[in-house]
Length: 335
Image (tube, rainbow, N blue to C red; front, side, top):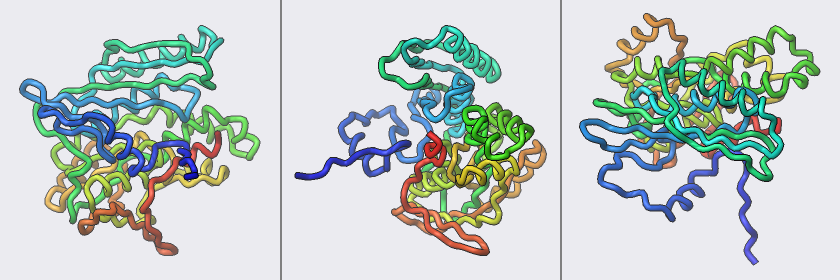
């Protein structure tokens, strides 16, 4: 008898997801971009422009999930080059959840949506049997009249930019959900409080819209962190990406917390970080915009030749390895 294949935490591998998607209708003349590896949001032709739609659940955090749900979904609209405007949350609460917890989640969603000039247009709320903790799944919608950016449009010769904080979202989640564990490891209260602030600094909307006319491809790395984000760009664009690990900036708070927990900062939730591939002809203009706006960035590598396997080579002064399988986010180890 054939042994059953069991699925692990996090995103399913692309070969399994492709099989699952094969059961679904995904063809429509107005569907410009449907389900695809690394593609942050659907693109639908609508009137004189395009609707951009994306859904994302918050499953690896228990605190600040209302705030996270809005911003994580909004980022995936922005990486298409559109401003997120409309939101539909699905809020699932375990039995016997206190009203205070429910109110906190909704207050956070309201606060986050208002910070983006967005509105909640519908959704669903329920008390869900068997659920161990609250989960919010958010759908975000935006509209673009002009250029729409796709993950698959990374081109050989593009420079790879990492803009923002690597591992900041994951570190913020850890600081909120595992504070006692961090204190027991000797991490100072000051470092933990700094990390908690990172949970609020996860929006890439402004920087993504600033890069809209310079980048060939943009991607918001969430589960699996920076390395999975690069892997998804490589797979979507069917290219080989080579990265210089020594060029990747790691914030000292992220470094201290991940080191003490034995986690790889390149493999944890990284909303707030924008990955962009920019052609050589536009790189100077892109850097000028980033520096004028005061964004932290690094040129960490280059898109090389076509590669159907969508591999990422990571090099440094001390090691070299290939990322050729999907990465399970390191934060799941803590659960």
